[in-house]
Length: 441
Ligand code: EPU
Image 1 (cartoon, protein in one colour):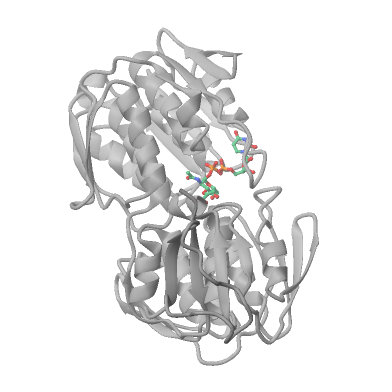
Image 2: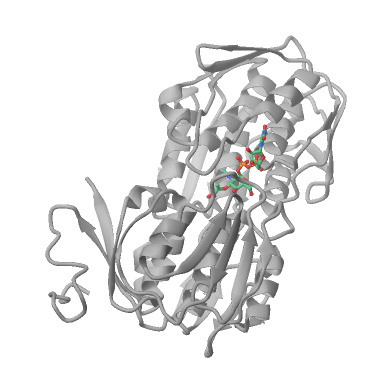
């Protein structure tokens, strides 16, 4: 069923919001759970469609899975793995599931995993994943859209990544946990989700060192050393950054709870430079507020600890109404400015030239009918609609549902005027202010 948001902008968001578990961590922890015979329970699991897809992938491999949505926990019993194939029907729905490749090769010495294919935000190749597995001794064939990896015994190796790819670092960590000898990943990704995966693996009995730096060393262990565990996922820094943006955009004041502030240092510093107020209240709580018009800034998206590409669209939304001209350079993806045409429809003044965007701040945005093109572009449109004059409709919510748990409920708790509606019950929306029935808001 096609669903959409109806949002009436202009209300400052106020109150408290609690951040859920990190999507980009939990998906990889689920893949890691298949390395050990035994039962693993992961806590702080966000209720997202991407988590449901990953659960189907893991179940298809023969592991027993149980998802307790109320407790926010997933239990995976990977004592038996009965299939080495991750099918296209699932992998094409969510690229992150490609990470089962490393775990399967590690555990079963063979894996057949569908290549994820294209993606709205960029080409997103997996060549580093493949080259790294080859360096560990796997023979790789690409046939009929699938990667077929086979190896009698994985052997530790020195691997250098051309780009600190998050997915390649994770796949290679998973592949080398049970390899013979030691593996070094040079120019490894340093994201907090990598550290979370390393902590998870070490709790399981693996020997992973250096996660969070550019050099990760994995000393292979015997399979008998790995065992099922209980583990709690880190908070979602991108969800936290999205709510920080929404509160600031609407000139509100709110407490962001269950956040690891250190994971957002670069982003927070940029917001402070723009004129927002951000205070550490407790180790895991940030108070965020904004009274005056923000000042424009420039930034370049970079791998962690640089400015996160996943918050680029949120920051662009803030720049659309800031004082001055801001320049964004997107250095990770070829096509991550999909929010631009939609923001322009709301009155934003944005000039885009390849991976550069020049944003001249206007006084205000006005509500419009908008379409989410991908997860983060969609969330940025929600932020834009919350601060705009008048009502907006945002279509294609399935993109947003991939990465934001209870999004509209959390926004409503902060006082935001947002409703989820089915395509069928669309009464009058998006007419000029005052001409339509707003009773639903
Ligand atoms: N790249 C290659 N070859 C490879 C791997 C990557 O050329 O073999 C390129 C990609 O095309 C891209 C760049 O390297 O241009 C970075 O890609 P990376 O592998 O680091 O990203 P990812 O693992 O595919 C994860 C997150 C993304 C986030 C990026 C960067 C998950 C599930 N996804 O993707 O999150 O943008 O890291 O931080 O962890 C999102 O949550 O909305 C999202 C897209």
